[in-house]
Length: 459
Image 1: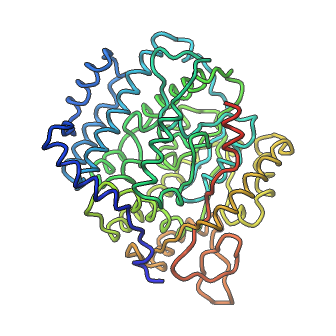
Image 2: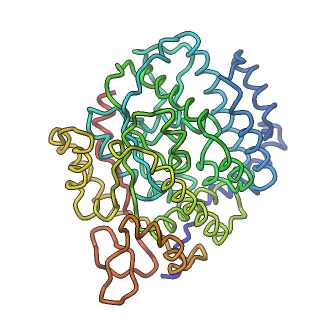
Image 3: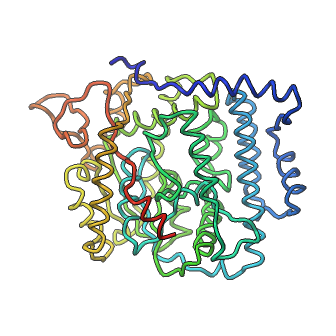
């Protein structure tokens, strides 16, 4: 299979939307939205009658990101329309959240003690590990609809009927319709366990924006900032989510997002008693899978996306994530951290999870039936719909990628087995530990979770 064949194509609906939107604007059926912070904020104030967005820190990243979208992102018609809609939703959530906080000060008193946080590069098995832990009902976890739509309306009260999951399901369906490959790369449903990246987005923060749009100036700016205010706001939203569920705060949260690789000092300041599980995977697989994820998101929003540019940027970004993680990890007490290798999870997930539960000082036995059910369902789904990608499709050479990450590979013993003495190391494939790899590689690090129906029934 050629490298070009591995680059997925977006749905024809993207082209149809790009043609339809100018006609709708011309007919004045809808107004062309403006990528302008003042226009968006002023419109939301008039619409909601609210004016407090909950502090002003978010405004600088908002202004910088909007400037990058106008000047760098080469947004198509759909991308422009969708971007304004996303910012309107994020900022409306901030208005609603602040109103709820002001009316219910008890929310800020809720405990977020001793969370378990999975930290690893994009595509290093963080989703699978997070979902395994989330299958243990002794932990609290985010659900997909809560990361998409984390804030209820200001008149909501715990115990009310909550229909936010319907909006989230529609949003997820729209994304999967415009690019079906996204459902293969990161399958989910409204009640499935999900990462808290959407909470950081409410501060206009995170690599999510760089994975969706070509915004290098925003990315470089964010890399030089202290992310503590974004993490403080994320913590407030976690408390709000627990309050909206009507739950007590006795269960520790299990959290994860690759953004934490960039922001470990801020994460540890806001969650000083966190127990952190670091995931590590052979870097060629991480870089190749990350590039594929980014490609599949960017091509929806722009008609001018270059795979080689994605390769260069996400090779750099992965390198930065790992260097920052390694430096910040040394300041975390050993009693609060454990390291997990992707290959070990593939070979013996029960053994690795046993090590994790000993680290957490918990009995794994009550959680094993649900974990086994998730893994069985995940394996079936991943065999039906594997995620295919290659480094070559993004202009990257496997040898150069290996050389760049040699120190990391050696430090965490990630070097794959060799077929014979002196042979070139090849990435270890899931469930095929000694198979030599040529393009395409196959990524099986996430799957359709087994617990959707059960979780939906509980909530």
